[in-house]
Image 1: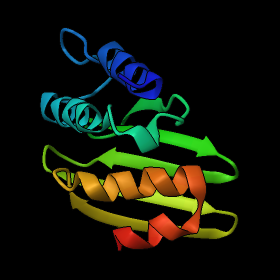
Image 2: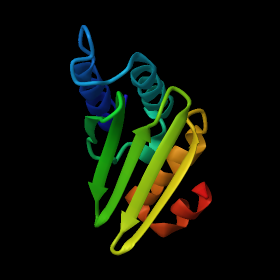
Image 3: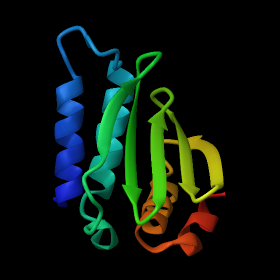
Length: 123
């Protein structure tokens, strides 16, 4: 498993408490873990840094990265839907899609590593 995926899974485990004291619901937690596991062995993503994993208001959670002046946030809106925000300089874009669309998340992560070419594929 890639180091970033291990760190993300560890971050998710920290958020899962007996009563989700930090506000992360079961459905969002499971969705995030499944998405990370689906991407953990993709060779093009092994160079990713460890993400920051945090709870968000309304029982969801967010995974985010900053790399080479680019920023990417993946927000688990509910068990089935993702909200994403990616930014470089003054340009900020957002989108929503199903958590099962792993290829869109992979495109964003490749953009984070390399630049604009892969980000255009998620729209």
